[in-house]
Length: 405
Image 1 (cartoon, rainbow, N blue to C red):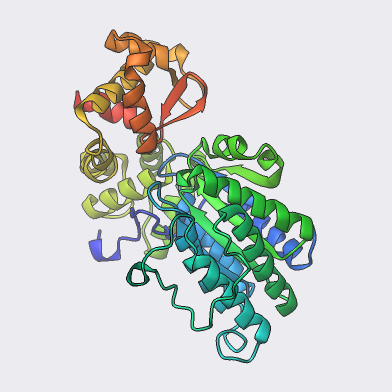
Image 2 (spheres, rainbow, N blue to C red):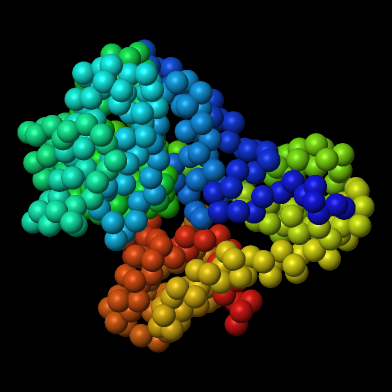
């Protein structure tokens, strides 16, 4: 098989050649865009799932849909060490510019210039003491900042005012605005509260603006802890692994474009190896294609290529995350894997284990392990879907840890 023609794409957030298994989400988002554009009531959207299920890929695909509809869009990736104000300002600046170049930034629309001035005031306002002039961040907006609007320093008040103004501009232009936020669970508590409040205000006023967030499985709990009404504020969609039929399509459709095929036994072997997780499908597909001598690809080809795919995943997918943990945190991770193996019946549908079981494996009191657990939660290596239980954010991570042992 010609490696130059290899169609598979095992990259972080890189769109695969065939976006299999996400047709329902794509169709549903088209409906959301049309309803919002017609000022029909609709909720913002939150995508949740483990690492490697394709949340970022789907987020980008939904953004492309909005762009094709003529919407203004902006995207940001939340980080636990960065407040929301600056990255959101950049995303919203891009969205306003996309609403219509002839109207924005060229002096032809007083309303557009006013909105950009409000956005600049929002961007430059810090919640704490004002920085020195040389330390102030410039958002790259050419109009003067508008004082007295979205610049109070209270992120919740400011964000509500800013999104209201931008939504009003979009409505006057007959378009919409969509903000896409990846790794949404990493937003700080104040920023989460402000975002929920702003989405609530927008939904009540019927302005053509939505927020589309993506994050780990515990993101709904993060939102709910901030604002109780967030359970009704967002439409939650769980992004999971692919069915056998969808996984087969993710492999065979790109191969068909290159006049190649798979034997049925090869597809069965690949599904058993990948578990239907999109990132693993791309990684195994790439390795099998590079090592298979000819088409159709057989189960024997899969067996030969599997060690190469596993080595690649061990370094780039599992190993890079494992290396971020301290020795004590690694002990905790291995204990999680051992606890799941020792009592398979004690795990639930998402593979979580009780923190008490992890402590039992390590022969320590649960309270003494709280620092390691909390650090792993902050690093995004584990998550807690319910009190007293934890799970890996990365599929097959427990298997990787047992193999390493």
